[in-house]
Length: 435
Ligand SMILES: Nc1ncnc2c1ncn2[C@@H]1O[C@H](COP(=O)(O)OP(=O)(O)O)[C@@H](O)[C@H]1O
Ligand SMILES: [Mg+2]
Image (tube, rainbow, N blue to C red):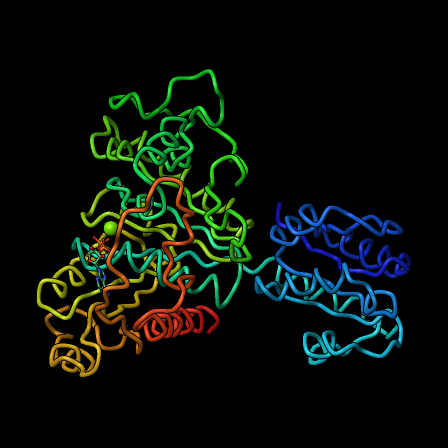
């Protein structure tokens, strides 16, 4: 459940209840440590922070002195939570509070209209839709899976926010980036995988046959979404795991079955289920990213209809250009105007130092005619160079999944450069979504 975390000192009982009550009236779920209690399992508190979309910080003598609140604030900062500080008394700010909060700390709870302003700010954040980005190109091998894991791994690490990756490619290479094949297949065998976004499965009712086992039948029975703890893999696991939330709904081969669907009606239901599940997860995450298959199928349309933005990795060559051109055509032919996502194109595997002629020409609009749309206007300014650090290697079994992310890897020749590249792509994409 997506919630508002309220950080408070143990003496802030009245202001705490005041804020809680105001949020309750605005239908915003809250979480806070029970007032009066001093100690609470840090794991429980940390999990509550990781499930939160924002944190109200009651700024008081009691909270400023509290080690628990200091730790909560650190974790919130670490994972990029939106902070809503408000004064509960006139205590002098500590250095930590000053650095983290002083800029935004304008109101005191007793000020006229302060509580209403707080609720309005929190509500706007609560209702902000989480962007959905689909990484696509109708050509294989251009870097879709690499971009999905590495660029958005960098986004999660540097920009923060709860991030969900969904492996929509029946080849499930994204899943295999993080898990060995046995682990991935065992998960799919329990329907803890992407099929449970399309059809009712054993995640919804344990005594039924898996939809993955029946290729000729598509279930149109309704089902409720299951929680993230049931369907998602937490990729930031283990001691020393980076903070925040970076989850994966793993892929599987069996979603290819929709290509052989016996009826359009059943596909209509399955597609609507998928959109409903994505809408549900929008309230649980701050960013959702699809990795997709290279051929235009039913899955392509599902991804296009659910996405706000299509991110297309493209190599600086004519074959890639063709893939982008086809994708743009499909986006116009298959998706209605109001559902059509925006397109951003990212050059991948460019030369490290000098821009290739192809890239320079593309940026100057030389290929716009050939592409059939203004490719030059959709190109991101940042690009991803060719780098050995980005070459996929399969994880060892038992290896922690986040260790595959370049952004979390230690020092090494060229790593810093690549990390800066990944960060600038993430930042540029984020600024497009904020615009
Ligand atoms: N910027 C890059 N530098 C070096 N190798 C890359 C880069 N981008 C992708 N690759 C490699 O190219 C191959 C195809 O990339 P992948 O992400 O699987 O493409 P797709 O998902 O589009 O099929 C993989 O072996 C990957 O490691
Ligand atoms: Mg791929």
